[in-house]
Length: 91
Image (cartoon, rainbow, N blue to C red; front, side, top):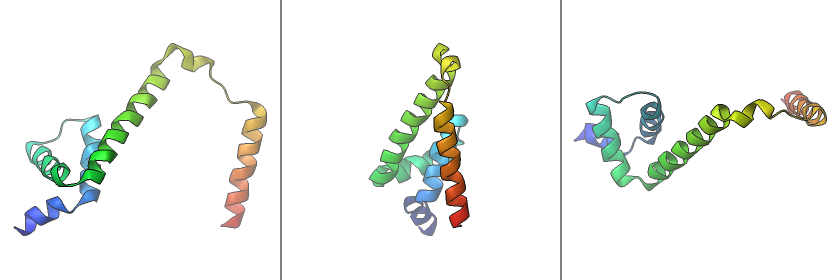
């Protein structure tokens, strides 16, 4: 019973399995654990839906024919670098 509680309440492991599932095949045990967790956790179900969408968009961005034409404006790069340095100086 304790092992079942660890599956049901372990969102960290569930999110790991959600990400792993998008890269490789889960073991039977992992599939069962994830399914059990997702049955009772609406937050992880939402995470899974969003994660799949983000991965799909990133894949399309990097595999589209147009991605070679996308470049950041030099002025934008400069401002971004300044913001990064500003944040680093705060820490």
